Image 1 (cartoon, one colour):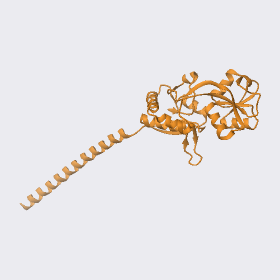
Image 2 (image 1 turned 120 degrees about the vertical axis):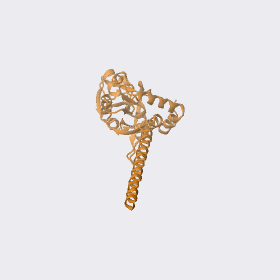
Image 3 (image 1 turned 180 degrees about the horizontal axis):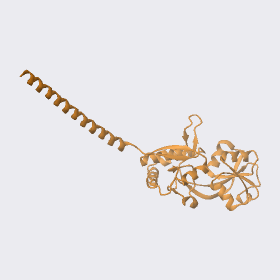
Image 4 (image 1 turned 120 degrees about the horizontal axis):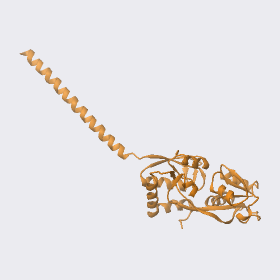
Length: 268
């Protein structure tokens, strides 16, 4: 009897341990599954945004922290937050940025990119977010160049791969000197190595205000009125959410706040 009782106790103990193990495994699977579902629903997609860190006040690197700053940067962050995704910025030369977008290497790009019919053939754009144009800059003592009509035969500095370069090629007989960075063109104007520079009006005016006041000036009318857009891959699913977020930011005042921070006034 003692042997039978001992055997019964052993069998009962094994059964209880097996039941506990089964209960624990089942609970673990359930917890793991719930946690996974919660984590997936809470995660945001992260997209790389191509940009050019040499276009103040739209995008530039903070000299103290090395972080990207500027109107475009803050606007893109606000759009991403509103649309429900994250962004990380990758800086490069402007002409490489356009090529990268056209090849589908980058899902998004923001860098004062003018919306043109030629570019729209290979990439998509958001709705316009900033109205711009091109303007000539010369030395303050230059009285020969008063407008775009006076640049034929003159040497004009531009940034490689921009609408400024295309405009001069299509509309003038100027001698074009293209630079990877527009700051080099500006410096050549100041030092008399080129006769003028043609580039986006807000950047030209910002440079004169910050670094060339009294030495440089703009001449002529604003040329080729154009708008900036956020660039995306052709057929991108991001076009609609980006446009919706941009519209919301304009309606709720966020766009105006960002604009005023960098341009010192609210948009007209």
